[in-house]
Image (cartoon, rainbow, N blue to C red; front, side, top):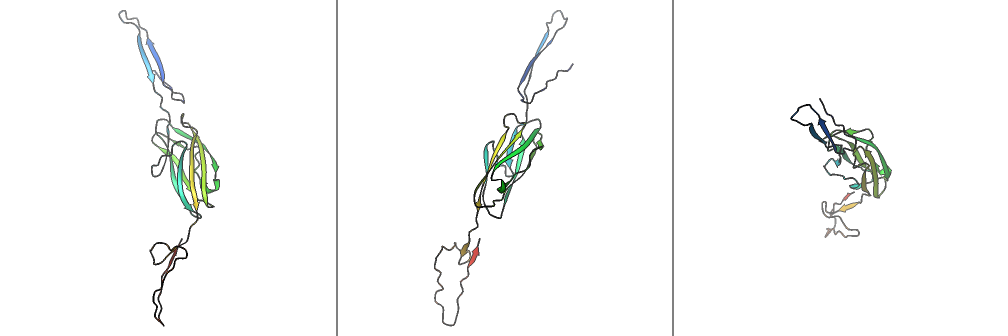
Length: 193
């Protein structure tokens, strides 16, 4: 005969007993205690460099110049058994400055990953924030919330003379030194931004 155990979605431990009666004169009924531990999906969120983003945690893109962008792979993994199913993401904050992958319908079996690419491409200077909230079937970490931050930076002009030296300070004086009559002397400047 077979004995089966079916777990519900919470993965709560199950206990039970099995009693087998018999007609053996010198043996009583056989009693067996049954126990099962549930294994449910366990969400784990990281970036391409392995940086973990805990539930409620922040990923900072740092400063990104206007007209440029910075992207990071986002991995949503399953550290336990079962299949992790992801629901839709709800976004709030500076929506025009960030891109976040569509998660709804993605899934990950044990040891596998879902996800996509996050992008920060600021349209104006200053600090930017995006809050991302998404659901899954992880019983103790749904919804999952991630805060994305970054700063839109303006490229500043830097002047060097001589080339490769520390940037000039505004109103700094550069001296040609002595220049003979009828000759010339050149100072080479480099402008970077």
